[in-house]
Length: 256
Length: 228
Image (cartoon, rainbow over all chains, first blue to last red; front, side, top):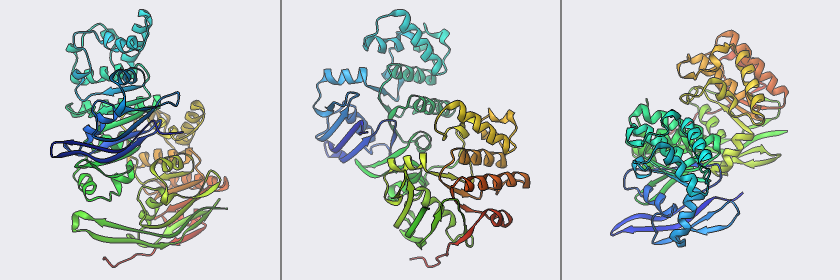
């Protein structure tokens, strides 16, 4: 087995700010990796660079597809990146409105990804969309409603259905529970946990929520000021943190 | 056959938020456990028994030394293993029953117990149900998430999960602490069966009568008092 995604020596500057300072990371099949850190730590920049949405100043990102072919993400053409995003990857945004088409029905939002992946049979697409609505705990009877009618939590679940319907090999998630009510967050996290385990997905999750990282991730990468300061097994990083910043981060969480 | 062996194992905690003081907890721990044997960690409270247990499971990183574990037929130093390898070791070889169950919302007790078992899912669930029943968990609780269970019920879910997967090496942290005598008796039976099946068991048992019945020998964990 080899890693799905492997990055090293990543550097990215915004003026005087080092967003990424010699960052290396890899993710293997079936692995959930959480990137944690506070705002400005560079964690979202890292996610964007790995997903080909931003170019690093230096470094390398290699993605290995199902056929074993390697793709250098930093050199990939826009068309090649679009192809990966359609067929191999999924991206769950913090704000569902960034991913959903608000004037298109729930079923259309899910089915659109299938059509982009080449499916043409309307009945099949609709049936798959309905199944996925159920899987994310939405009433399939609402398949023809637009997401405007939905709560924030439902919109987020619809985005997850839309992302996972094409069976991606690697899913990027940027604060998927950010901005939601606490009770909605808990349900969503639990839904994601179940889906990830059932589908054996590889997930790269950016979050500042330590409890979410503990629930979902096998491994944790702690970032601060553009650098990876600590990484390892989730329970070890959280229960026996070594770096001063990780100790601060862990000790700042209130036990419920 | 040696299943687990530590060599010169040491562990310090360095507290960066408390001015960087270092608290030494374990020094030169040399523990050997063989297949079919149960070793009870002994020593006063605060001596580092739980810390040693957590180091063995990889929950704490070690400061120095090695932890040799028989994994896939060969001795392998898990103190130096990376996170991915450690996950594999935990999936196949090394089980740990902590004192408290970390509850996952919305997951039924039966699924928590069946989750670490490999192979056919129907078989896994059947074995999980049998273990829960043996630990006197009524069937009506099997389908419920343990969040609302009592401490003793949660511990029994945890124990069922730990014994279900039949790990070759099993760590038990106070397995009978919140159990009544009848359930403690069931746990003693489970430990004896696991030993007979060749498992190496390392446990912390504050309950002396339980310890005397299951442990083949004691391993003294020596407290270290000086702070550097």
